[in-house]
Image (cartoon, rainbow, N blue to C red):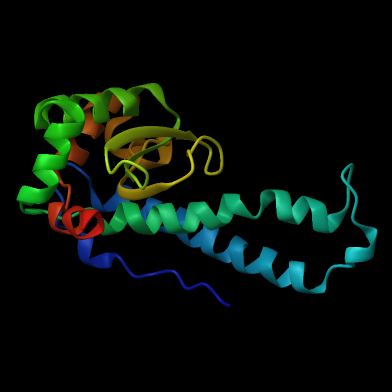
Length: 192
């Protein structure tokens, strides 16, 4: 399968507090993940598997690193998909789940931003498939930290590349801008 970078240019000029320069740089990084994912998949199809061992081998290393560009590709797609100016409101169903899980929408948003402040990586709001509750998980790199049985409903990129052009080291301002630009329609759809 060849993975294709999606076109998110519709976001340009349409977000409050996230500039076109920031988005264009971020799109380029995302496209790099897609390219690397395709490259690794191609190499996995041709590498000599008879040389595999735990200590080192080309196949072993490709398999170990595969999830980095894979998650880098699809977490970025989720991130861009859940951005929109005037992204609507939480559905009644999502709002109820947020309140049941966090106590209030404000507590949820405070926890989302606090989680974003603590991580170089991602904050993923997930619906636990076992009990249906929502949780914010921090994920370092792209492949470390996500518990099993989670359905991602909101993806927040907290790597510096997501905010440095606009905010430098003022990450809290980026997190506020992100919350203003959440496409709740997309999050509602994922939650359902």
